[in-house]
Length: 170
Image (cartoon, rainbow, N blue to C red):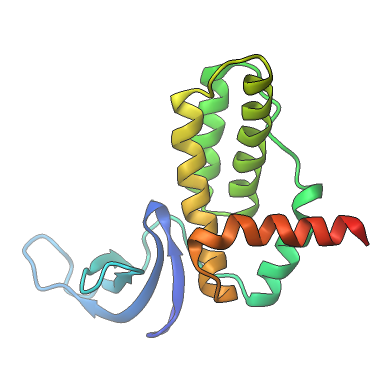
């Protein structure tokens, strides 16, 4: 169980802070069922109430700063998604996003970057589907890394690129 003040990744919402645990006084809801009160990062006073035992959405602790730094170093070794069929690839993108796992976000990002390069080399644009999933994966990954490393989210891609360049030169 998470504690008040913990930062977690909550499904597609992303980073949230646990503001407390409560019960609900509503018809049709068991009086003893516990709910987290979550505040989505960057949404001011917004609140989400979700059952502590919610099995539908992934809730996990944010990684540590060391985990984040290790993850960035491991990016070259994280495999891309090698799926040629557009529908199957989109299903895999969805599965990766639902997992809320940072390595899966990297798999999406790396896959789409490679696809972008291939498309541009042929004088084509990247698909709208790829663009949509790239933005979602970057938002999820960069939000968590930004919070942990103290780097603005809009500078995260440049930071990662610089770190990878540095590692590859060693």
